Length: 350
Image (cartoon, rainbow, N blue to C red; front, top):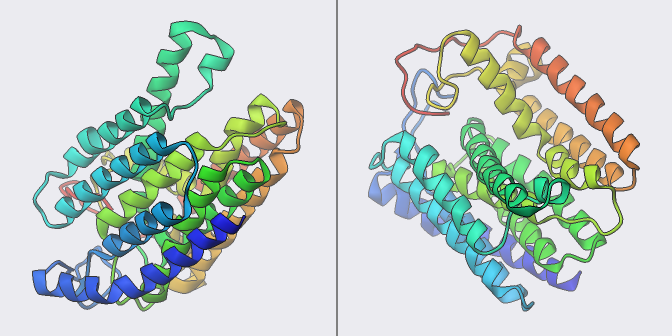
């Protein structure tokens, strides 16, 4: 636990302090997010905040972790560096948006596979090469899906960082309870970095994390989900817990995907104010109320993950069905909520 606390405080302090020079650097480079019809801010805001979180996590992990799994730590940091770099290049306008989705994210997932980090769903059920192959495919799908979901979640001040911080609380707690030091330290570092960044990013934001930061957080969330293991929990609980911890971003992505597909739009390449937070805000909660509501839902999902780790297979199945039903009901309800419609010709994800 001491190592986890050390990682948290190092990342927290580093993130808060590094935002200042990173913000100045972004302004000097002219890397700012300009206001527009699909944006919620009304003045140019510096990007590159993700660079501060990236540095904070790397520093914290390197200083706090002294275990034997150095190859996996190296693989995680290399993959995180890749997605952060791709995201920053996209923020700069130097990459087509599809490169990050179809090249950067799958390649980062491949790095995890090389270092032995993968899903263990089909290999447990089927065994043999077929199980391993299906798990490799599931790993790529999971990493790309969660990374992309955080990429499009970064559309309101404090939302993406806060949701990542809330998820990290439960990843760290469950990992600690199951004796997983690497996951505990990594989750604690992400918690510290995201919380420190919120000092500057909560409404009214003075800096944005940009796609580099959002993809970085999403990749680490996906990695934590793959690494989380339970000693005594049922098989179903083991893979359901990460889904519950990340329920907010999965819910938002499901809502956006269904809503945009029904309108003939591409979910990850069409920006717009039709996310869960936008709709909650339009229902009367306002910007901060919508963001805090999603924090609360993140805490609820994390608590459900903590509960499921103690349930039998039957209990986990019933809880999973209940959560799925609630997600679908939430999607059906919010899809009818007011939002600002976007054009078919839009081309950048948000």
